Length: 365
Image 1 (cartoon, helix red, strand yellow):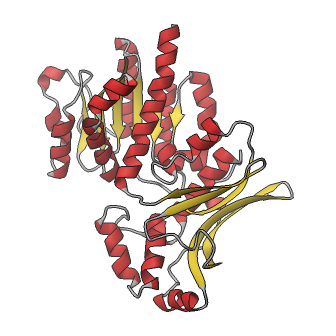
Image 2 (cartoon, rainbow, N blue to C red):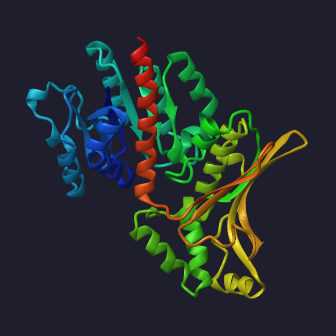
Image 3 (cartoon, rainbow, N blue to C red):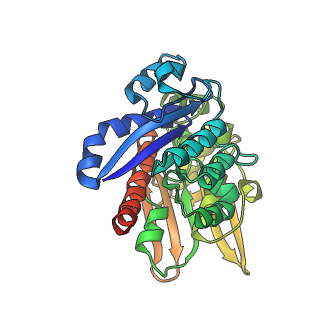
């Protein structure tokens, strides 16, 4: 049995759905994957911070967060906690990793789900580096660390002999990175193109049917997929971050979202969408990358596609990436429905991947 102590840094929509999924699948994880877990720390801007090395009550944490109450109620005086309810995520990581070493806790995992910062990928990148250097493994759904600091992070994993897993960074729970890493040995990814932002895609397809931009956006916000400030989605920044992540990991590039050629969808109207349909076309926000003259050229922009193009036929909440490979030709990976559950599942999947590797290590120790 592999025992994981979890630190949840970020406890918003994705973090809370992940916590519920852990509870829902707890028996399955133990029975099928020899994986046992406990949450020992949670840090969030809105609800404060809680820590107890003996484990926190996850169900109670979810109730407190839903009620808008401080998570400080999770720990009492008997816990011996030394983390303030006002402590930051970075403070919690530093405390937890130091205590894990002192208590000889074997496997500490930081689960990072803070919001994407498109300027520098912070504080998520700092969280990841502090966790790795402190001796913890990391799983994340945050695109920032992979998009801004992938090489630095992977160097730290080698130095510290820790794992950094990030399947949820692109296409939620659909295995893009794992597919290439685990099942395509010796295959080179020459480029890709795809639709990888659900909110922008949903808005565009909704406008094809006569709904307004505002109506479609409100639906995505109500579903918890789009934030109150939708600029990352509609201005193409989220897609640019995902594009950078794909380039850095699959094509061994060294780009950031700021270097991606980017155009959003704000200027597109329902009339534009419907006129394209009448011409047998579809307008889609397409992310793409390719090597040209030894350089990687990456772009996010609305593109008018033929109706016969596989990307043109995707429904409102569907995503797809087509990988251009040197041996197998194009490989399409499609997600028929994306949302919070799928993103939370990516974190769960990464935990199982981590536990499998740790189980082999523990068995040989």
